Amino acid sequence: MTAKKTVPPTLQELAATKTGDPDMWELRLYVAGKTAKSQAAQENLKKLCEENLPGKYRIEVVDLLVYPQLAKGDQIIAIPTLVRKLPEPIRKVIGDLSNAERTLVGLQLRSTRS
Amino acid sequence: MPQPAQATINAPSIEQLLQENQELRRRAQEAEEILQALHRGEADAILVEGVHEQVYVLGTADDSYRLMIEHLPYSAATLTPESAVIQINASFIDMLKLPAESVLGKPIGEFIAEDSVSEMQALVREGLQGNAKREIVFERGDGTTVPVYLCAKLEQEGARGSCLVISDLTEQRHYERLLETQEALRVSEERLRLADRKKDEFIATLAHELRNPLGAITYAASIIGKSEIADASVKWASEVIERQVRHMARLLNDLLDVGRISTGKMKLDMRRIDLATVLDAAIEASRPIIERYRHTFEVIPPSEPVFLTGDAERLAQVFTNLLSNSAKYTNPGGRLCLTAKKQAEEAVVSVSDVGVGIAAEKLPHVFDLFYQADEGFERTKGGLGIGLSLAKRLVEMHSGTIEAFSEGLGKGSEFKVRLPAL
Image (cartoon, rainbow over all chains, first blue to last red; front, side):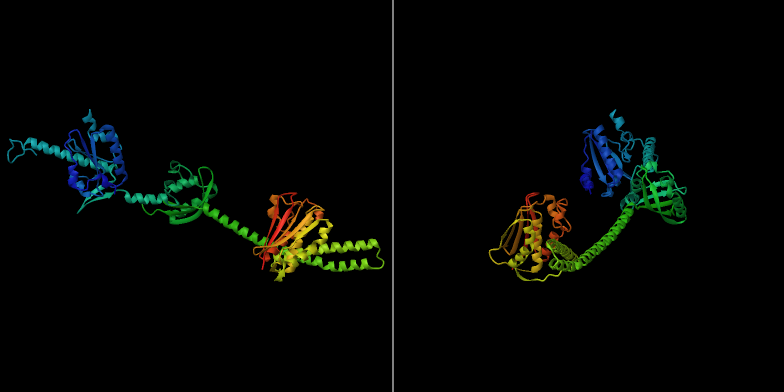
């Protein structure tokens, strides 16, 4: 599975990817294999971050088909879900992120930037 | 959760309640968001908690089913009870050569060729009773038509309507037509073969019947020529008759031989023979025509005796034909040459002349039956276009080969026969 290169294999490793950099946006995208929306969400998220957070973001993609147990921490029910881990507080956006405006508002990226 | 310093042990403080309230609101909002997202179809997978967490991918089963229908080699559509098109697959679009939006929602009748409309109505009616099959002609967007085999079936689940499965018959029709053409060709080939055989039989009978009276004519002519009343002109006339009859007999014999070879009735008397004997016979037989044309005739015999297995008479006929042919197609006073030698394990006999030659494009046809290189070339030279063909067939019956060479028109020609030598 392609998830191998994007998903840390253990919870420990996953936790270790967190950094204390306050300017860094830590985003985690939960996907389910290669469903249409999972793939769209990955592409949309990458584009969105490049345009709005260049050089200030880190994306982890978690494939729940491979690691369903990883959903617990963020209480994921619907997939795909994007979770903003940092800056706090945690925010979630569900869907393929194709609506950029709604995604940015959901991440509170609009207000934090202005 | 941080505990306010003034908090009593039993009752939560206002701040605690407010904080709890805020947390509950947040969770309620999140739940609301999830529900709405699901409702809007924004998620295509759900994580279900059981003994283990498990991801259910929504729509996956439907997707593969839909793909299967899309990629079937058959066109398919579903209709409302009023025969309006509500679903179609890619094949259907391809078949009609129309964009999906101009098909969906329209009565199916709009896409049926006029002649087929009543048939289609009956089919849909029968389809709603259960299922039905008929041949229908669709009309495409570009006005062309496509014959199809259409199955209509009542939809058992959900809204009443019918489901159409359509197999394009175009290819099958092509195939059927191909088969018909093939059959027609086979019949016509058979007829031609029969006609050809009848022709061969007819030629054989004709040659036979025409040859029969010749003996009597020759005999009668010789009696007239030798009788006491015969004066010079009568003698001359009887000689003309005898000579022409001999010529006619030769032609008829050739025709009979062709017939024999065509029908596989030619019998060869295979013996060990000396090539020189065969050539002597051929030279003797062609001497009259060579002399008539006043050709110079050179014979280069083999340096040592060459023996082969064959029918002496038939092989002599081969070389007679070649020599007569050369003599005829060389202007009077020309030069003919016959060379015979043993080369490797073959007897090679070549007949060459300085005659009219053969055009390059006609060279491959000189051995064809009834073929005469130049139809305009003095028809009076006679012949039926049999001699060379007969020579070739006889040589082949002796496991030999014959080839014709010519540098072109006016450059003379050479015929080379190779036969297995002993």
